[in-house]
Image (cartoon, rainbow, N blue to C red; front, side):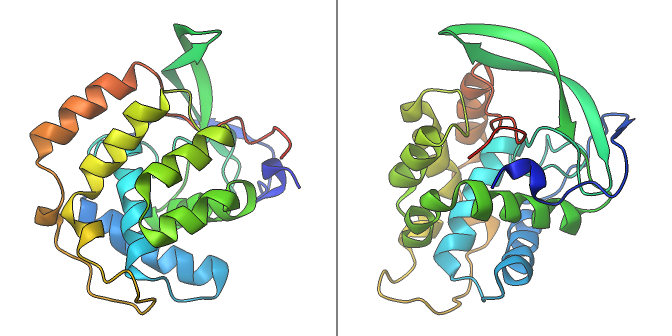
Length: 214
């Protein structure tokens, strides 16, 4: 099943203006928790919410650099057909290049969160066991193998760990219950995360083209 079939646009794709839609890390975390419940039909554990929040934080600069409610740099058109054309960096044949590409755009935070979780489950499901166990290195490795991002695996894993901070380590590894999620202050300092984001942005942490098969 191709990711293009997931959340298919209700009409022909149409361009919208790139619009910054900044949110807090707490907003990211809450929206991901709600989306996971809706998409999978199962209540999420604290660990998987923390892991996915760490990834969304890396992809959106802790929510400050989110555009059009896109949680994971997903390319193409959203469920309502909206797509925003943005300049981005990619690593192609080992070289950093800058090009304009279309990214999914959404009407609301929850719509963006739903599509983000749906894409992960359908196309990158092999990475979710690591996310559920809080293994951010394993999560980064599985995403890299599946073609999610073009940055180096070590940089991406470091960014996930920095964004996740102490939150992941604070959850009992034996528990699969919904546990209180630590406040945003449990995450790495904004200065530390910002430095990693700046370095990683050169390699374009953008999802593989959802029109590709997989």
